[in-house]
Structure formats: structure tokens, C-alpha cells
Amino acid sequence: MRVRLYHEALRLWLQSLQQIGFGLIVLFPMALPALVFIPLLSLGVAANPATTALVYLNTLWGYLLLLYSWMTLQREGINGSRYQLYLQSLPTPPLLKAASDAGLLIYGANFFILGPLVLLSVVLFQQSARLSAAGSMQLWLELVPLAGMLLLAICYSLLALRRKTPWLSLLLFPFLAFSWATEFSKPQWLLLWGAVLLVEYWLPAFSLKLGHWPQGLYRLLLRADIDSPSAESLRLVALLLLIALTRVCVAAVNADFAPYLLNVISFLTGLLLASSLFSTQALRAHYQLYLATLPQNATKQAVQSLCYVLAKTSFGVLLIVASGIFGMTQWALWLLFYLATLLGIWLKPKLFLVFPCAVVMGLVVLRAVD
Amino acid sequence: MLVFEHICHHYDNAVIFRNLSFAIDAPRVLITGANGSGKTTLLLLAAGLLKPLAGHVHFQQQDVLLPQAKRRIGISANKVELPVFMTVQELLQFQALQFAGADQAGTSAASGKSVTTDWVAEFGLTPFMRTKVGDLSLGNSKKLSLIMALQHQPQLLLLDEPSNGLDDHSRTVLTHVLTSYPGQVIVASHEPLSAGELPMLHLPLSSLIAQNTGANETA
Image 1 (cartoon, rainbow over the protein chains, first blue to last red):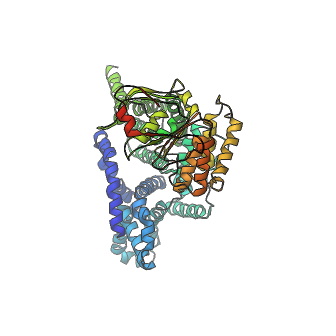
Image 2 (cartoon, rainbow over the protein chains, first blue to last red):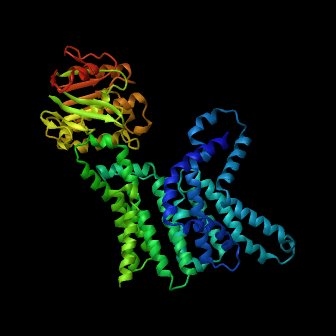
Image 3 (cartoon, helix red, strand yellow):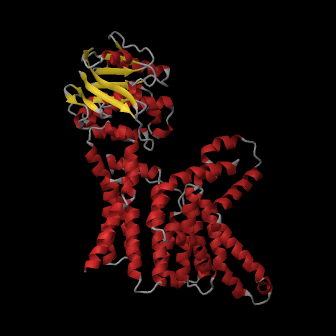
């Protein structure tokens, strides 16, 4: 029954993703296979003893962010939230319930857990003789990064099914750890990561309390975001993922090619941060009748919601500034792409991509003329 | 006086109103009609929440689509979905702030607050001030919707099925509203409602539409 409910939720989710997916395929046909292969490449990086702590940390972070997003998107389906009251009414033995929970977790996480598990099992099986011999400590240590990846993947799969966002261990800690990546070895970083996870577990849950500020429509929009943070959380996770991937890629590619890669990242981050306007517009559309009862004209409400999106964007901008991935050129491009996307969503939501793409075309033509 | 002038409106292929014109001056009006006949749409048009495809709706000679007109009109209808993510208290404060500075008697920011408190207490919603709107029961949602329509003391009160889900006490309060509210009240309902000693003009929507072949009607 749980598997059928999960498949039903998955079917509905995939239907809603079809439109976005089509846009992605049209825009980035070459990037899609790369996205699929990211987890596969990450396994290779994690298993390779020659990988530096810097590359390992960023790869692990990207892997876990992808996994967390993947599991968060499937949360309702895996938990069977919609049918929870009915499921509770069934006389299911606790052991069977725990087994179905674990089975669905692995089924949902799929490659993210099975990948490192299979690879680790193969290595353990093939190297069993060497591992059991005396003086095999170094060999065991070389397996720690892969084993750590597996354990963390299981942890974050579980955390993604709960509503509490691991803001400290998955967002803040890895973001800051990048600056000191070379100070510790890979096993030491994993220990530190585990410790932060524990600290986070014991930290009391908190909720944002709004005082007297902001007021009016800003308060209504902010309250909506606080109440349903998943869209903004996913946007933040996607931004951090982009930052992590950029760091890994820039370190790996030829220095002459790096600016081109960063230009593409400025396009993607501009698109990502401006897409927040979609949520705000959707909220206004959902409550249009109520908002129409207020003695305020629609244009003023629209301008206020745009100001709210700009204020939200500043947080993303701060993160990019702190990561230090952009130079002046990329910031100028980012601003162009961001404003063009906002304009696109504002004027023609269904064709919004045309606007930033037109900017790209314009820049290419300008470059060719020069 | 609420005036509909040559109103045309339809949803997809279903025509709801074609060249509908009438004027209502009676203080208490009960609009009745079958399910899907357009009662709620009529109220939404009267409140300026829907823009008709043709024609105009005026209240006290002011176009109801204008933002200023919203200060004169209050509406309670299930179709007007309230923000489910806010608490009752937050939403009432938000609403009071939006209507603060109204030029009507008893609708300043301060008096608006006291008016709110009165209706909240009258309808027995005080224990639910910290409850999220989305977590309210059907009856309490209806009470909140009524309070929000009444909060700014509008001159025109539009109530769509106001007694749906209400308990006996709240029905008594609703009758009190219909009896003693100083402004004009237009109700769309299946149930017979009493306005005490005030005469309630019964207006079947079907006959209103049938009589309207372009000529204006004055009720």
C-alpha cells in the first residue's frame, strides 16, 4: 500500500515537473546528462585516495545537497502524508511499518544511498584479504571518505523526510568549511561534520517570530514564506549547490576557460534568484479575491511584492559575495540576467526565459561586432 | 444605492449575466436562486472583486472597482479565500491596518481595533486568536469571514450564505447584525433569514435575470 501511495505521489509530482523539464531540455540540452552523472562522478571522487580534502569537501557537499533536494521533493510521497490518518488506522505491526519506512527511504534515495553502498561492498569484498592482514590501517583509512559519504547520505535522507531543515550542518558548516579545507584531513572533516550534526540534533528548535515589523503586504508575504519555506529552501539549496559545483569546476578546468564557466553560472544564479518572483506572483494570484477586497490598487500591491522579492534576493547576493566566485564582469552580467528574468516573469510569465536569452544573444552580437 | 448597468459576465462558455441592469436601494435584501445560478458571482461583482466583461457596477455613484470604493464595501463569501498561513489575530491586524484612515465614522485605526474586538467577542472567536486560519473549523472560518467583512463598518455589507456552518449562538449574532446593522445588507442564501422588524426584500435571481432584457429595474 505504501509503495502504491508513493508511486501515486510521484506520478503527480512528475506531471508538475513536465513543464519545467521541457524548459530545461530546451535551454540546456548538454547539461542534463552532466546533471545525471554528477552523483556517479562524485562517487569516483570520494573513492579516490588521491582526492584533496578541498575537492572532497565540495563534492560531498554537492552530493548531499542534491540528495537532500531529491528527497525533499519526494517527502510527501515517501511519508504518505496525505493518507497518514488512514495509514494510522491500519493494524500494521511496528516491525513491518519500520521495514516499509526503511525500504521506501532506500527506494526513494535510490542511487544516492545504493551507489556508495554497492561501491563500498565491492571494495570490501575485493580487498578483504588485504584488509584483514596486519598493517592494513592505511587501507582502512582510505575507505573512510566513501563510508562517510554513505553514512551522511543515510542521515540526510532521513532528515529530508522531517520538516526541520539542517541549516547548520548542511548549509552553514560546509559553506564556511571551504575556507579551511586544507587545515584538516578527510577523516577529520568527516568527524567534524558528524559532530556538527550531533550539535544540530541537540539544538532546540526555533521559529522566526515577527515583531511589529514588517507591516502590511510585506508581512503577509513574509508570513507565507515562513509558513511554507520549502520553495525558498530549495532555491537556497540550489544556489549553494551551484556555488559548490562552481568551486570544484573552477579548480579543475583550465584558467582560460574559467571566465566562460563563471559567465554561465552568473546566468544560472540570476535566473534562480529572480525565479522567487514566481512564488510571490502565484501567492497573489491564489488570494486575488481577498487582496481585491483591500482598499489598495493592484499596481501598488504588485510593486510592493517586487520590492519584497528584491529584498529576498539580497540574501542570495550576500552568499555569492561571501563565496567569492564572481569578478566584476560576472556581477555585471548577473545583474543584467537577473533584471531581464524579473522583467520576463513580470510581463510574460510563460515566456520569461525569452528575456534573459535575448540578453545573452545581444551580448554575443555585441562581442562579435567588437 | 447599488446599481448594475448592462452587466455581462461569463465563465468559459457559460453565460452568467447578459445585459443585466438593476438598482437596489432597500436596506435589507435576500437574493435566492438555484445552485450555480450566479448568486455568488453577483456579490463578487457588487464588491468589485470581479471585473465584468461589459457594463459597470456603482455603489453610491462610485465605481466599485476603484480602491476607494473598497472602504465602503465589506464582503463575506467562501470564494474569497483568506490567507491560511496567518493567525486570526495577525489577519485581523493586517486587515485593520489596510483600512486604517478610512473616512467613515468609527473606522479610524483606533476605533477599528475596538470594533474588531467587539465582533470577535460577539461571535465567540476570542479563544482562536492564535490559531492559524487554515486550522479553523468550517464554522469558525465563516465567523472570521463575517468579522472581516464587518470590521471596517462598511456602508454596504455583502454576505454569501452567511449562516453556513454557524452554531446557534452565532446565528443569533447574525440575526442581530441583520436587524441592527446601520448600512445596507445584501444576502445571498438558500435559507430564509430574519432581519427582525426591518423588511427583507426577497429577490429571486432567476426572475431578476428574466425581467432584464435591457430595461432597468428599480427594486
